[in-house]
Image 1 (tube, rainbow, N blue to C red):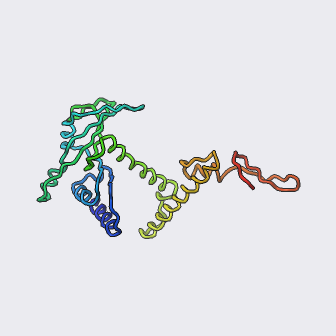
Image 2 (image 1 turned 90 degrees about the horizontal axis):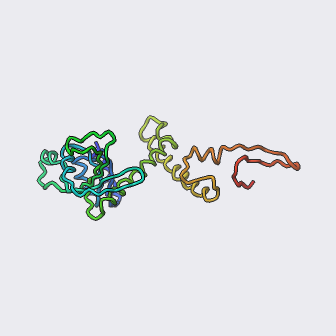
Image 3 (image 1 turned 180 degrees about the horizontal axis):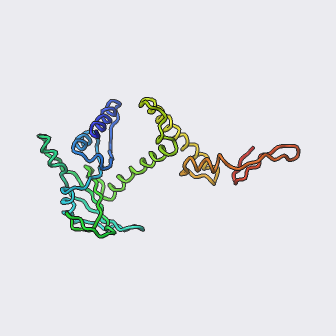
Length: 241
């Protein structure tokens, strides 16, 4: 029900006068109905394409591969104009002509040297379907890959703020719990950002467990000296008591 979910999302945004400039999604959204919805509701979209015979044939026509070297791998990147979902468009009996989009493809050599049946190359492919005509291929790949940042936030919420273990049996109650813990996540980010400016042993990238062991749960002892009790903290933290 990806198309129904995406359609409902855009309807809610329209009701609140929120205009979408860019839509990014993984290959789960590489569907004919979603492409139709997104192309109308968002100025630009970037969706990872799933490999199939038609896509492989389109990749095989690319003759403008650019070699890109990094410290860890060599990537070849190219692009081609592509009309996806020809059969789905035909079955839907849509009278409008099928749109042509931009397909930006990256490939790396396979370690096992297994040859792709359609491209006759021993490569792994990653393709992004987009209607963005202004950015170059490298900028499109970089922009799409930034969606991994929000994926990391879900990892934090699942493992640090108990989204993996929802406490209630009703959807409405769990929704409140998730919203509240998401607010706590934002508060935690603000706190550690402020604290890290003062305490050198803290970094803004620390997860909550590491923050607790570095800042909250630390060894300490009350020492009586000169008829006064003083708190001795066995850590290089400049607390003021």
